[in-house]
Length: 140
Image (cartoon, rainbow, N blue to C red; front, side, top):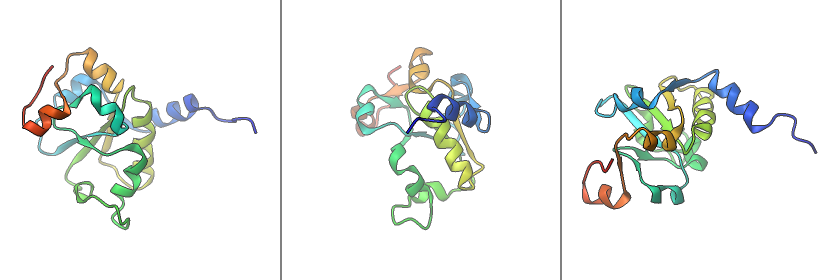
């Protein structure tokens, strides 16, 4: 069965419907208590580091963690006073995930253009998992 709508079309459609922040815009919100940066990458991708202060919510569990009726719900996502800014490796998965969360009814969601690759390229603050566990902030 042929693919009638490829991933690029899906990503482009999502990008047209979601709020997208540049790295600079997202970086400016890092210390805002009303903002939670969310890393939706696979756990194996975290070996490369992550955005300082981000919360890891793997893409495969996101809808379940967000929905209060799910047995996997994470209360963090019930905070309507927070803006959740998602990122992935390149900004494709986060665009699709942001669109999905909007489809679920969330309006307080956005994503980072270019994802973690662009974050690192622009020298925005990162931390390794070891630094996070030790309570250190920033390595870049």
